[in-house]
Image 1: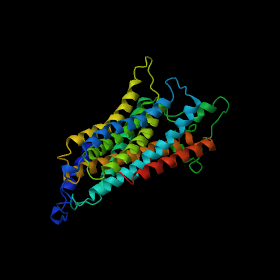
Image 2: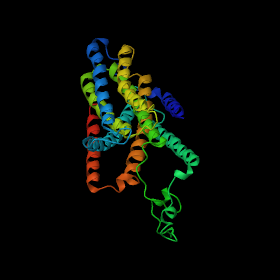
Image 3: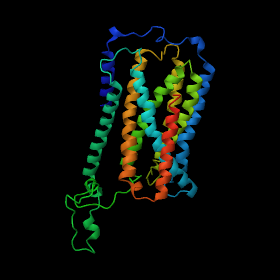
Image 4: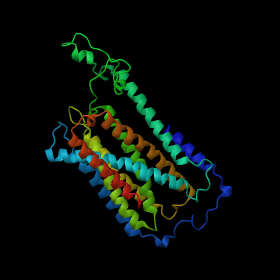
Length: 358
């Protein structure tokens, strides 16, 4: 289904009215090869590799072990990094991906689009596809294991109370509809060993990988302003890695033989190498790659829009709503709420600030 929205975005742009295109041929031409600093571009591959690796592996190393134990200092630091990462992911979706996709599709080198809100339309389509996959996946899981959906109040109170009064429609809690008709005990944090928790994090990484490969290629082929973009991208990868790594580190990989623990390291490694691979590709094709070419702009715009939709759904629904409104943060202590809100705000600010240079 994602392929459908990619194709739709491409067809929309291909149908642009190029008859009214007023772009100057010089402004849309590729930069001259003489201005390309090959040595600095090659060095950027290794610098970004290290920055990405530190960002994603650090929270995982500080996260809980397979038996659930965790150092006190690590536990508190991990808690802060977790919500700092939530801010990073949400800010990445709004201030980087969505903004970049708007700018890409408004570039004069593409021409006049037949449908102007192409970027938000693709992002909306991407978000809806992910939501449908998530929704029907949850329905399938509930049908496979209906007993785990909730614990009715009747079974808890049966021993001490002869009758449980079901709230009327007027007094029914707005959250009770999320449980069984007879009422449930308060929702708790999503089980980090569950397939659902693992799917959510894999979905999050998928959106980041879409984005990372394209920014790597663009950086590897960039000529003018490379130094500033390179410096900003190092911090971008570091902070983005912290956000993703905190989510990977929160998962628990259950296996009697410990044979699946390698999956979390594989996820970390995938994030670590994907942007450097993109930079290497950009270096290899820099003589033929035109950052203002129509094909290149279309590819970057479509993939950024898709990634924006994925991360908006993940950040707002799976992280903010699921953890704060109906999750464990709803009933936690005020001290933890203040700490988490502070970390969330810092994450939002840090990534939004980096958006000025990327």
